[in-house]
Length: 457
Image (tube, rainbow, N blue to C red; front, side):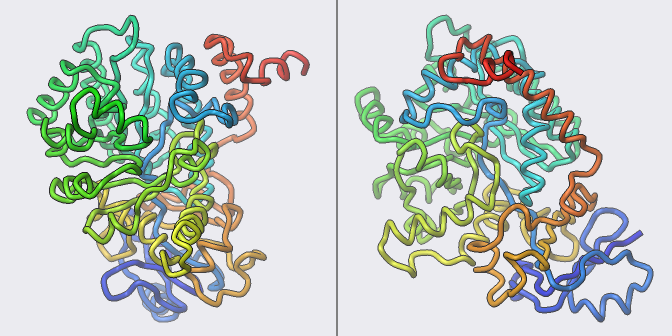
C-alpha cells in the first residue's frame, strides 16, 4: 500500500523546488518516493493511499547526523569542566578500554530511539574503543539495524597508547566491521582513523593502503583543537590536514569531523581533495574547542554537514538542538545576523549531509526515485501552530517533541511521536544497568553518581 504524507509545507530541498505549500509526498510500496506535489491533486490521483498528516504540519527530509560516536551512548553527562584531551583521559579513555559489543548495541538502541524521535534517519558513526578483540564497533551495526536506521559505521582506530597491540589487530577489526556492514542493506562502512596524531606511522600507512586496495572511504577527525595543530607541527612540521594530504589519506572520500583550526592552506587542501566536513557546534562549545569556519569552508565549495558528536560530548543525540545552536553560534561569532540562515542550516542537516556521505542519490531531499527517508512535524504543537516561515520555524522554534512521524527507507519507524516496536521503558532499564556496570569496570565512580543511585534504589 502507498502512503501519502501531507503538510502545510513540504521542505523538499530538490532542485528548483526547495519548499512547496499545501503539498504531500507519496511513498510507494517499495519504500521509494513516488511523487511530490500538491496534496489535493495527489489525493485525487491516489484515492487508496493511506493519508498521514492533517495538512497543518511540515514534511521534510530525514535529518542526517553526520558525526557521532555510538560507543559513548551509555556515558553522557560527565566531564563538563574538561577540554578535549582532559575529557578523553578522564572520561572516554577509561571506558574505551572496557567497552564491549553488547554495551555498544544497547547504547545504540537507546540513542537510536532518541535520534529517531528527533527526526534523524541517517547516522554516520565512528565507534572508538581500545578493548581490542571485543569487536565492540560491530555493536553499533547491531543496534542501528535493530532500530531500522540508515547508517555508516567506522572503527576509530588509534594505537598510540601504552600496551596497544600491533597494527594488524586494528586492521582486522576494520575488516570484520566491513563484513558486518555488508550484511545490512541500510548500513555502509567507512574506514576510521580516530585521530591522525593517535595512530603510529605504521598503522597510518596500512590504513591508507587498505583504503586504496578495497576502495574504502574514510571517517576521521581533523583540526579539532589548537593543541592538535601544535603537536602536529612539532611531530611532522605541518598540520594534520597537510600531513594527511601528503600521505594520501585525503584521496579516499574523506568526511572529517570539526576542522576548526584551519588556515588558508589547510582549507585549500580540503577543497582540492574534495574532503567533506562535519560541523558539531554543541560538542565544540561544551569542550571549548573553538568555532568551525563554516562560511569560509562553504564558500570554497567544501560540503559542510551537521552532527551531534558523541553522547559523551554533546551530551544528547537531538538534532534540533544542533540546528538552533549552529544558527545562533555563527551569528553571534560574526556579530552579523546575515552570517548564516535557517535555510542554510537545514540544507546542511539534509541534502548537504547526504552529499558529504556520498548518499545524495538515495536520501537528503524529497524527490521521486529517492528512498523515502522523511519526517512529519506536527503543526498542532505550540511551536508550529503559526508557521510564518517554515525554515525559520523548524530551526528556531521546533523541538524534538514536534516530531510526529518518521519513515526510513519507506518504513514507518515513529508513529504519533512513539518509536514503533520499541519498548523504551525496558530499554532504559537495560541501559541503566549496563551503564552502571560500564562505569564500574572503567573505575569512573568518581565522575559518575549512577552507581550510587542504583545501589540506593
